[in-house]
Length: 361
Image 1 (cartoon, helix red, strand yellow):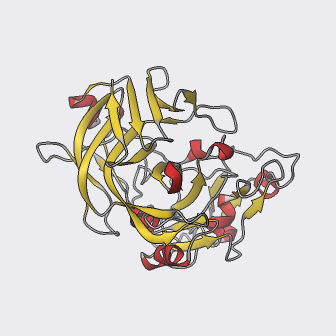
Image 2 (cartoon, helix red, strand yellow):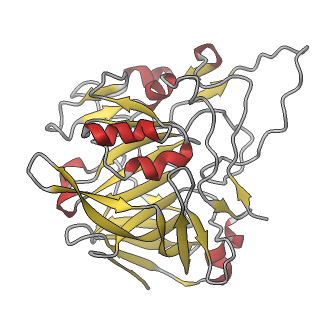
């Protein structure tokens, strides 16, 4: 039976500082030019004390909401979305390998940016962090959590709040952002996710609901059961952004490259995904301009379209639908049955139909 991510409840919410312990190394992470931004996950534990006279805890879900991965150490904390840059000057990025979901979108000039969503793992450092865009709120709204970014036009910032997310903004003075000295601005803003999470208000304390359906194990994922063998996925996002994914049997993941160059983290590890989902979307220019006078594009994520879903070295075609901002993307097969993913992390390519293409081989 497929499982979906559901809110996870523990004895104490993330916001209760006395009920959490974060490794001391987090508190001194990479704030000088001599320090490489740390990318190991922060150790997070929950308070083991409880009032024995109180009612017993309800039965806990057994899987992380955004990955479908089974765990006995589930923690109730909000999802944290962070806007991460993907220009040449931004690479290699820090912390992407610990995300549950990464959304890749086309912005001005044909370059792409990421929205990295963290829940099951909390890395010590993530970056470079950049500005919010008009489609981000609609993409991330279903997580009902926090969104961290540095910069953005006022209407785009407001849209994040309008859909119910909590804004964590460098420009507004939110804690947890810092600049490194080994990169030039504006490619040097990094952040500490634990500090972002500590700022969650009372309305943003709980774990997210699931965004996708997950099979009980990789062998039962829809692509594995009924898909065609897929050793590579070539995605053209624009003339200047052409990510490629290659199936790696040894790790059971698709490995990412930027063109023909392996995409790696600041640790040197190649970025990988258990699932690669390509959503074919429409992209339109908004009335807003960037500082160079270029129209700011918006990816249309409310509606429906074609999709390619890859898991376990196979892929299937599908249809995506999203009726409104609050609803997650729904993936269905040609016969209308729901598509399930392999438990693990997912990269979503929001491929514009006007400038992009996807080829599996």
